[in-house]
Length: 177
Image 1 (cartoon, helix red, strand yellow):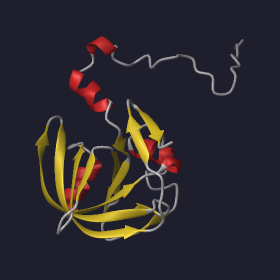
Image 2 (spheres, helix red, strand yellow; image 1 turned 90 degrees about the vertical axis):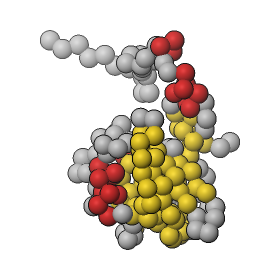
Image 3 (cartoon, one colour; image 1 turned 90 degrees about the horizontal axis):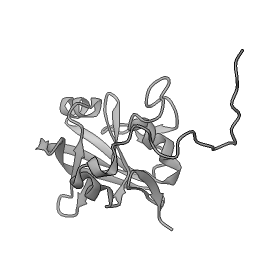
Image 4 (spheres, one colour; image 1 turned 180 degrees about the horizontal axis):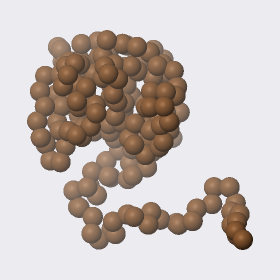
């Protein structure tokens, strides 16, 4: 006989992540980084491949530049190395599930690009409702901490509507109030 435990909608079994490293054992640098609010962006490349990236910096200039920290073992990095280009799209509050999918935290039956509407660009697909994107050409990459520091030139910027940003702060998504 099976016993079914009925819980209220939204109820959680654990009040904390049972796999989380105890606070006193976490890296102080990682804890410091977690206290800095970061924009949630989606980087994509022809192939297609994509990855949620919250360590992104745009530097104005002529030309504009983009810096970011990504996983050197990701499918995205392989696609960027092969094509030499990628797209970066800032994500907004409606994109939480999309961000989790490309971060590997949410299932993606049929592949990462199977759900949602996508606009094809020469730099990689971008969410059709992202509000804008940048097309970037890879300049350099090097190991930086436990990540790969990617340096790129912004070749194209497409802005559509003004959208609110999705932020990552202390392990959770946040919105501007």
